[in-house]
Length: 169
Image (cartoon, rainbow, N blue to C red; front, top):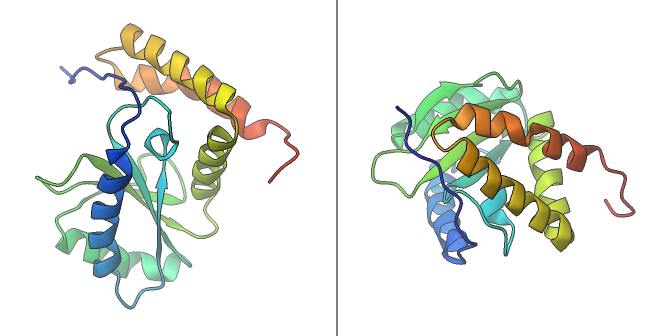
């Protein structure tokens, strides 16, 4: 049985947790041109979320992926493959690390573009972020032990946000 998922109010320490984890990742990537970004709901100030930090590690191209994967594995990350999403590689955090998901993406990855766009639109529109928080709380109650159903039920909202025409970029 899966652990129950839950949504909590925004916690300003999420940023600190991101900085701690990203610092270790940056250090391990020394010599590889890489960026580290805080994405997902915990990257949106004021937004309720599952207390799991989402981190995107961005390398310029596929040429850097094997070396980056190897270095992450040395840190204790467990490579889980793309989990069905082309353009990103997923990793489970090492035991004892703060609770986070790590995704390795190339700079031209559609998954990276979607993560950034979704985060930035929620940051820019408080009413949109509130709608998303309400949806997540409702779905977390409905699908408390079924993460796949919870994620699938959010898909229409995420697609709507990503497809919306806005006056800013």
